[in-house]
Image (cartoon, rainbow, N blue to C red):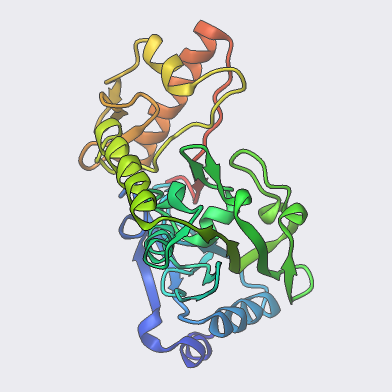
Length: 300
């Protein structure tokens, strides 16, 4: 890869070599990325991705690292991060934001503008792009409830397209964005006028619940998706797995649905805990747990 060409597009300060991914993942584990790129605008992002595609360079797009687990061997692909690709505007009851904009920031800006409907996302520690990618949700709300449309880069033909939510097959923690080869650039959110005190009360209530029930240790939030007809955390708890650990990785004592990094866990230790939990739950209840966290990278 021509580093000078990339630096010309996004600036040398936004090109990192052999970058430790534990600095960019909420799990605080994993190996290094050979190249870590942080374009600051949508135009820079599109230009960089087009360059990588045209030169057959493999790449992976990441946001704020809140729902990923990077293996200890790191990433061979070039990482293109939307972390710096923030920015938003509010027009009436519609918020338009770039993919890297934190969901919590959007929720707070909505509150400041007396806009209701995004309270559910105020405590989700991710970006808008990641939220759309996995149809993130909490407290009875999810992204598909508020999306007007999503602007994507289509890697199959190199075009920027505006898609409706129904084009993205948004379901519980699912979209077709990865399988279709789309990259989220920005999205428009439809909210509605509300009472500021009521909006803030809901956000405060959700924050208090999150603080009271969820661990603060490094993790990717809920490790497993909700199996149909069951609650993953309840199954794990009833299987006696709260507190189970391998090295510094373990099942949270506070919330059994969270696998956590207690201090300096390797990704292998985290994955071994995840695999053990899945095996034990299946052996006891014949229920297959599926990871909600996105696992990427190479084994050591």
